[in-house]
Length: 111
Image 1 (cartoon, helix red, strand yellow):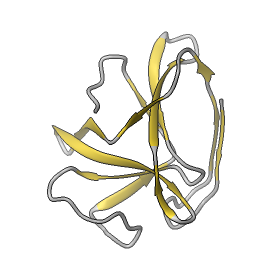
Image 2 (image 1 turned 30 degrees about the vertical axis):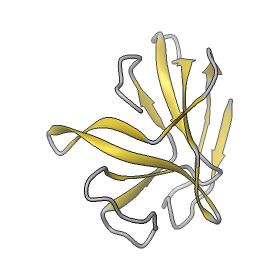
Image 3 (image 1 turned 120 degrees about the vertical axis):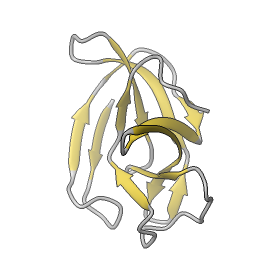
């Protein structure tokens, strides 16, 4: 899988990366991440020119380090926010942030 994500309102910098897929992609809407010294559940969506699109997680081979999971979204990457309080997806919301993709361990919690 090749990701070529341009700079946009969601991401300040462009990003290109290649991954070896080891399994099918599955949709997700939340993932548990380490933020500010604690594990927190974060809402997650893919992002494109029109706004939210599905986000996906799939097993990959990570550069000889063994299995990992790649979280990827739309052509403009991913958009995340802490799960509570809920808010509409927007690049103008300072409580939300963009990522080109995430690499997480096989044990990562998601739903």
